Amino acid sequence: MTTKKFFVAALVCCLSLGFFSKASANSWRVNSDKRANANFQDLNAAMADERVADGDTLYMDKRCTIATEQTISKKVTIIGPGYFIGENDADEAYFSNTINLEADGIKLTGLHTSTIQVRANKAVIERCRVTGIVAGDMKAYENDEADIHSCFIQGHIIGNADNGSGEDWVITNNIFYDTEYNGMCIEHLRNVIIDHNSFYKTGWQEVLYDVKNSSFTNNVVMKTNVGYYFKNTSPEDNNIFSHNVLTTNLGNDYPNNKQIDVTPSLVFISPEALNRDTAYELPEDSPARGYAEDGSDCGPFTGAHPYVMSGYPLYVPRFESITIPSQPDANGNLPVRIVVKNQNQ
Image (cartoon, rainbow, N blue to C red; front, side, top):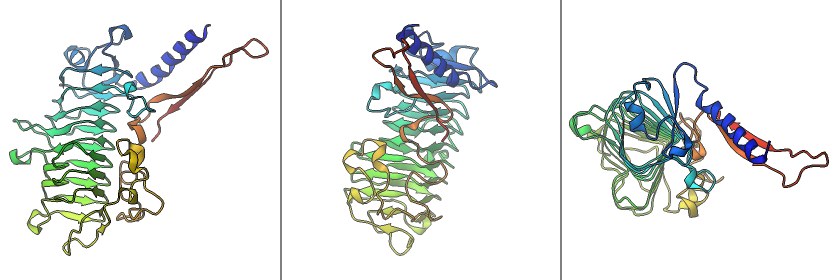
């Protein structure tokens, strides 16, 4: 077998482990390139196919780029390969247009998305890179109980509280990197849990705006433009602010918070590279270490859904490395070493 054929065979084997590991529901491949011979070229085609049913899983191939608006109308799980894969963003599964979630219980993981419109309940957006917004659609849609975990969000989250929806969201273990969008990070939500996130924001507008009956705990907030921080710190807003490390003083009403200087190196290990998730680990002497309510660290790497670098999807195998010698050994063999890792965290 030639080296090229061996590599292709190994690749197919590895992909099969991920694509067909679930026996209880059908799995499908999606790739925008016809030459890949996937089941579907985009999610719209999958939703239009009667073979795809609630509970199925759709796997996005690496380097799959979809530029048209996509609407997901069945309760499916959509899994991509992750993001920040080495230094090659081209290996992501990237949606450059809007994704509409229009069935209860849809789950997205391991994707790079732009805008996500939440038009149903119990959506799960996990381990995704979001370059845009996650929005509870302002039209006549219910969008309660959304879970947004362990994502790298270069944009903001906006609910639909003014229209009686956008309640009971859980926003945990995310990294918010906001240097371009001069607006609020999280807004228009009720009864929301915001816990163990990290915020880096250069704009002057608020981290929170029109958020009530909610909790903001164990977070790290580095805001380099002092401007405004929180719109909802009055007692009548019924919010909890506790055990956060942040570049402002919340006053006597919220004593269990720690104010720090506007110095990114205090809380980020690589402040020169904050457009990548590896920058947000804590330095050894960080004031966020050990300050969470349970004695662990503030920020995204502890808590209910610890952040996983690159958003690698849980239990999906991936290549770590492949080593192919340039010459056969003394016996004429060409030993090829492939390292495949199953993401178990």
